[in-house]
Image (cartoon, rainbow, N blue to C red):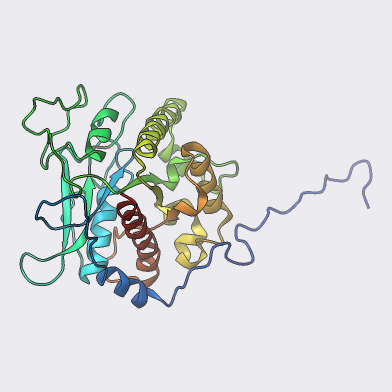
Length: 314
């Protein structure tokens, strides 16, 4: 009964997890996914007669400190079966750590043999600093040579020795991948204590800074669309964004919070939800984690498929 002095009824908070996964993950198929990645054969282009190794080139871009280099190291670790750390990552984050245009190849076995997909890591996007949007466009077109040091104040000029005037098909980017930390996206319902909120977005200026960066990412995505380059996104740090996922990675597609983050990213960049993959990178772990690796392998296989489709259509 409710009288005049009775306390208003307080509705219990909705459970943080859905009853079942909204996206199916074959958790026990890691071996199958890993084998398909390891057995991937390179394309044989008909319109580029230069004698060179062919591969799928995957370009990672996004804000500084959101896990681009760490993702590359995680893929290297999974495919080679041992912990790797060739792509230098900054544990503190905040400012871009990658300064040069760098291609990362994953060793396949004997000396000098590599898997036919490569990653390019570039300087992170920042509000007033970071990589120039124009340099990302030039990289996608294959005009940026290995080792080029990015200049936040000016784009790569055509008379620069690091400008590749006649790029081959392998020099060009075949898949563009946006990398965003789940913690950076504001949510309607934030199931975190205020210390974590302050840690990720301590002021309104930081929120506006991310909005500016997202606009840059949207512009880059539109440039990629004009070139016909397929795009997808990976949402990193899902374990830090949701306690239920931190406790069990298999909750990732049950987590309402992670789903909302993916929807926010989709709305911000215009990337379809089925092209967004939440992942946890290797960070503090020193032993393999099958669930972590399964999520990354799902994203990696999609990158390879998209790249192969793009090249087949040329």
